[in-house]
Image (tube, rainbow, N blue to C red; front, side):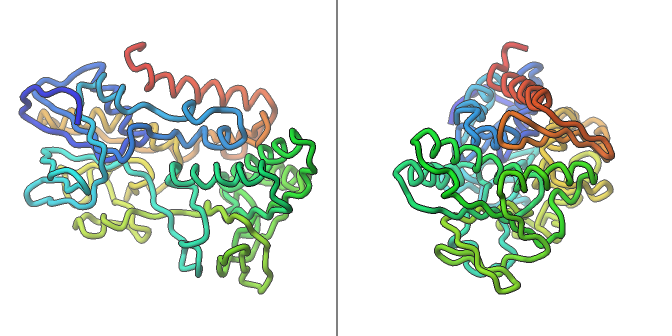
Length: 388
């Protein structure tokens, strides 16, 4: 545990170093709140930025490029950083129970832990599939796959389950990187087979027709085999079974379908939705307990349900910081209403991307460079918090 040790009147505890809560630390570092102490509980010192994950997989970024240093940010905010995992809440005594540390008391609590993989009852998926989140666990399997390909493995089948933006970006990024690895060794990249599976009848179902058509064309041109309108039925060592009886050879099955809330939240007494996400109001407080806030993927705004997206988590950061500050003062909180549409910049593996917002679509290398600039600026804001 590190950070400021000065006496405080109110203690704010942040569970999880997600996109919203790094903004809280930054704001409190820029303008400390007298009499208020901050504690951040995180499983790791470094928190990954999901927006840069496809670029990392494709080889455009190093692992360090896509992580925020929570220790540096906590030091800037004068906060304690506790490297541990929250496992329960005692809301009656206002304490967070951790796996390794003693209970941590709070006056105000904020939860921003992202989502947890949900395999939808698919047999063998929890044992044999690789969920993209948490990213640290996925990276271990990704590095093992890279080494296996480099070591001269024979024909390999790689299946990605989930044809939303995350799944499409992942299959194209993996294909781009692995084919380049084989080509660099003078080996035939066509020994790799890539499959994309989804029970829906099209890719990127939440995007406009032009964006969907663009990615169907890209996937077809690159030889990714689409299996749409059919659900995954079972995952076994070396293969994925589809509900229509077909079998796909699979050295790795990557799971990028919709996730849910962490299991321990069910015991907190907080109101959850059907997927186990915490229900919150426009003030970002839970509908159950005004002392408990939530943001990012783990939260569902009851009056403004939205698709889970990193842009929502990022934009909740400032209002979350403001309302935690106001709540600590005992003042009236402000409302946050998320936008209905936002700009998505979806990469195609190489240094090329597609912009999508409502009916609008654009594509090109300049879109990727624009996305790269935005992502790098975002990372600098938190890895160099004292620079403005």
